[in-house]
Length: 227
Image (cartoon, rainbow, N blue to C red; front, side):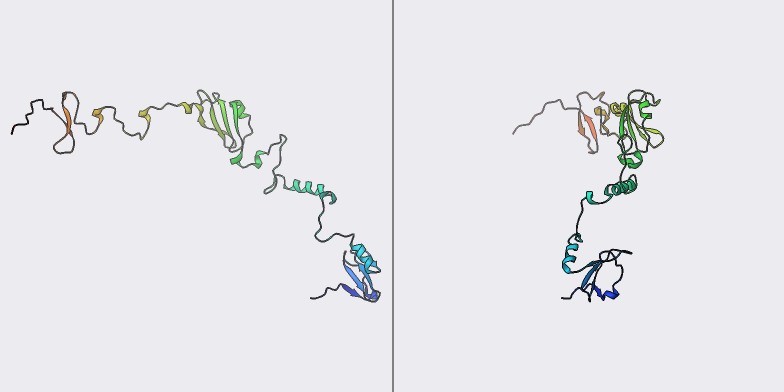
């Protein structure tokens, strides 16, 4: 295993200064010296015990400090927070009402409001993506009765629905693509004709087996014969 040797030499060659914490040793007078930084005189130690006592007052390389022991710690933290406030990948700030300004919030996470009327809607701070449900929207000329829901594009309000739409009754005849539901027997495609004039007849498959037809019920006697 190798050895570690500190910087050493004759007293005559000892520099007048050394980097802070640098350790030097004079081989002729057997003394240790500690550097104190540029333009500062060295600190001399007459023996190893004196050096050990000096080093005992210093911290280990891996030491820690509490914030109270760090000079201007609070000021430095405050300055760092101020630098990051409202910046990309930084910290969100708060306005005078204790809320994050809308300019710092993505539109997909912004507020939705329920307000009494159009005037209350118009008093909201506009931004793209803002939703407002207006309970009485009749001040909007496109709304006859009840309320409506609006979304803001940043400058104007766009109506996206009316509350009365939820109570809409739709006639079956007005539904597009509705399935066919026969209301009467004669509505069936295979019905052979009108019911009038076919009283007492029964419906059977025709001779060609490709449709239905009315036929008269046999009303005579049936004789099984003899043997």
